[in-house]
Length: 528
Image (cartoon, rainbow, N blue to C red; front, side, top):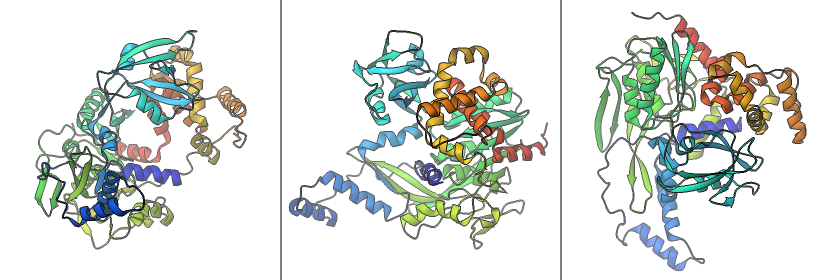
């Protein structure tokens, strides 16, 4: 559970920013005169402090502390971190384009990214990267951070990889020119039932809307008439992207959201006539990791009585940040406005106490029982609003779903959870898929073939036991019928063969929120 909440917190806060306004302060000189109190203090510390200090680092810490005294989401990003922080929202990075894992102290290619430099030049899933630019990277306890530093670089720059490939005795050298590598914000899109499509969005980046349109058009060709939009764990992103997505589901003229701040007059965003799914049945899935832009979409659809919201109460971030790039390459993100859903509610949860209490609120939901029973959901009864159809909705702390679905702690046995979080199950799955890759791909030509025909049997379970014994992992004993093992193992093997196209459809087969969404949509008719 601590790991779970750490992931939720990272998803709900880490990328939950909106860059929505052109700053009036962008070209100002941020280095004020030496007469300021802060600069005088820094001068004094630099001159008199008992040890030598790094003034630039001290300035960064001062700015960060100042911003955090305002609200939880104003932030300062040092120049060294800005590129990595912005990449998920920009939708790309510079590199060679591989998904990798470090297995047995060796870099193993999980899969080359489609259309990236590695895929084009012939890098394959299962390849071992043993040298980079002639320097050995295998067997020397290399870290993921070090791999990123070696493989990433400016577009147009070159890097040479020495690859050890199964079935070939000598290493193969590849000279790769780095390029722009897409970071997709749609994890998966597929037909989950006849007429019912499923699209999972992980963030609201600059490329998300175009990705959605592509996925929507593909599913429409497959007969999609109803849709499950999964925003669970989606920490947010660009406001304009959220508005564009919500516009796809709302009739022209309906309000999506409005923003307002001391220096920014009220600005209202309304739906246009361009939506492609304005009347068809729609379900939106949310949870405690759904924040900011996710909440804009869910709030707009709930307040307009347009969709059924299923899951658990969302994070509760209703503040808008503007990013200002500073002369030294760092950036400041300052809260400049609040956003409000169409009924006029702010869903920002309170932050008048300490930052620790604000961030620990997620864990308090668990302690309070809110993740398990709808009756335990905390709402502010003084902030009650009504939708056009008379449904009561609340402000002051996230989006409360129309249909509650509890956290499923019984999906996997304790043994399987322990095995998964140890990393052993991932490693075994990769090695099993890699060892049998040719046979499996000859037998199962597509992800759908694998999903419908491949089954985990006694041989696979025994192979897992032998693997644990070989690795001397004696603390984990697997019974013949561990709950969830067959499904999780199949999903992980499928991911190593067919990536997300097999992984998510297998895991989703017994996802309670998705099953509830399918049930709700099954009762709704479709207009011709």
